[in-house]
Amino acid sequence: GPATGQRCTAPRMLCMQEGTEAVTKALKDICDTGLVPGKEIGNPFKEGVKMGPLVDRGAHQRMKETIALAKELGAEVHGELHVSDNIVPQARNESSYWVNPIVIDWSNVDLANADNAKRIHDCMKDEIFGPLVHIVHPVKTLDEAIEVTNKLNTQGLAGAIFTADQAELDQYRNNTSITSLAVNGVPKDLSPEGPHGHPGLDTIGGKTHFTHYANEHVEKKFGNGITLNTGGAAAVGR
Image 1 (cartoon, rainbow, N blue to C red):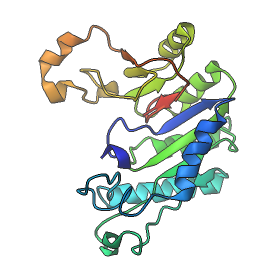
Image 2: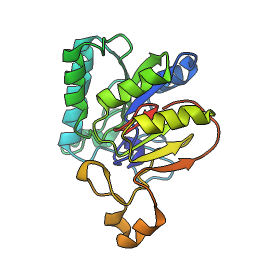
Image 3: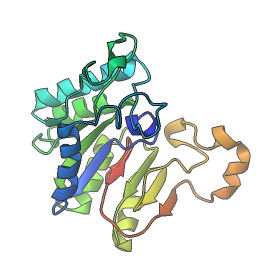
């Protein structure tokens, strides 16, 4: 599930500051090179395999539509969506949907253009549930990352910021609407009440979970770091 983006808190948007080009290059290289058949993609019940098929036709269609929009607006698309049945024999089954991981770099697209921003926002407002990450790079300041987060944030469920600066953390937290914010770690839904009326942990563990949290926003610190976003944030957002 998590490896194929089929998790409600799977990262979807990544805002990178100048100087972190090595991170974006590593992600692009993974997609451009492709996964290793039988080891990284294939039968999900086999030990060590990281990716199986998508959950349904809808997830596959949403990935295709997102890639088409990215190419139309001039974004860089890294990775080939189609998985050959020579690589994964199960892909011959027309009722199963196999894809490679995709990275879309929107750096060359004018996000200040209202029409572009609206089309991208409309594209992102529904969860893809597939292995696709949007990169907005480079952002020159934290204010710019916050602006992008708030402009493209479509879920508000979970996000993360990678920073060693407490002032930056406070600024990001106080100016974005992320329900569960991880600090220097993987975005997770830690809140008993989800964003925008969506369920959180309350649906998993019952009302008793609520007593574990005092505020609407929950943070979890993992150590020192950089800035990332999943479907709902900037730095690492969901």
